[in-house]
Image 1: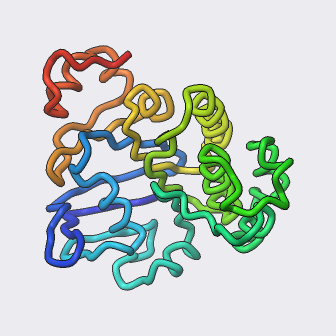
Image 2: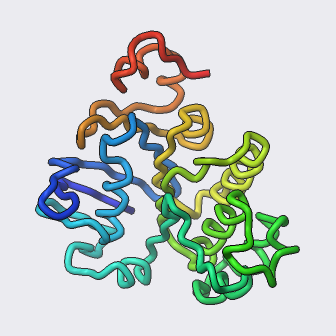
Length: 236
């Protein structure tokens, strides 16, 4: 579904990602973890087309993404939930969903069923929502675009534990039928391993380890060493 080969790029003159390769199969959820500043978010921005690619291939099925603008990648079936959420502050919840709607199984009604808390805020402006509500709206807005692959950058960041639990349950429901592939960047390792079937560990712009989440959970001390956090770091 999504194939990244030998990707190098970053911001302006700064190279953040170097010779990196990643694949995501149809219906698969893949988590990317690593310390802050290793290039996880920049990788997603390169796939979306907002960071500057220097070399390497980005393919989406049979489509070459390299010559395409960000909006063209979105139209081809790529969804994105950015780290800063980026909801339209001056639009209502209903309007945020309406501007992103494309034909498909995800409609405003099905998105609101996934996040029922938003149903009572349809006339609220984006800037009037709490952090958790903005995150839910950002995800719902991406879903109603009916993507084939969804990129998510730190969806649990800054959220209270109870909101994170609700978010994880909603995401599991959204991908449960295998119709949507997800590439997830997540700082909370336990959330990443709960959602994903495969996990990629990044360090300094490179992939340093890739394995099933089951094998990573079985050796919880090694993940800290691979991330450069020391053997004392464990997965709860």
